[in-house]
Length: 250
Image 1 (cartoon, rainbow, N blue to C red):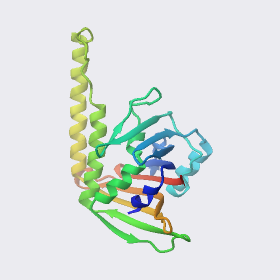
Image 2 (cartoon, one colour):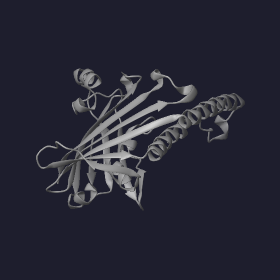
Image 3 (cartoon, rainbow, N blue to C red):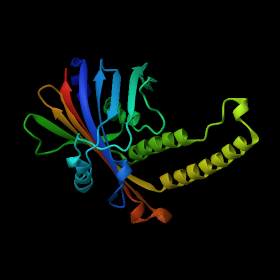
Image 4 (spheres, helix red, strand yellow):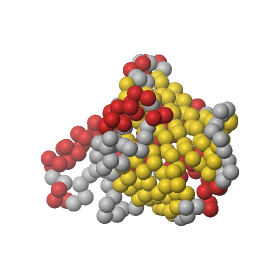
């Protein structure tokens, strides 16, 4: 799609935001605003933006349409990624933060790449602004579930207790704690797998494209997750919304 148009740009600047709602209520700690750059089509830097709590309240009230870059973040993060042999790899740098860092998953270039290979239904929306077109890209139900499962399973693996590497730190007390934590992790992982089996996932992207230059201007995502069977409970329903604006090409 619009990826081909980006080939003529050595640097792309972007700003984005995302949040999660449970049962219609915004999860405050899920609000994240970030910025970044893409260089040479294979190097991505992402960083959280400085807080602006007035914008946080407006974002929670109005949803994705009013998520702005003058932002809010509970904790500062920084990530650097590079594409090597077709895979995006996280680069360890002096300033990078790893544990609990949500930024690598928000790589906008990777999102655009994945859309090209996913099973989707694509239609053009009416009423786009002058000089732009808006594509509605809906994942098939199986593709939407597959995408969500992969994301959550990766998060669970990152949370899995790690065995101490050095023998001196691997005492009986440490082993007992590690065993208990592993047991708890297994329990939570099994619960996640059962939950995913009963999940109904609807995922829709909207891609705004500059028609003259065939360049992406905005990518939004709206993912609704509801549950059937024993898991059916409105308070368990989730809506994840995100947007990224491509603000500059050089």
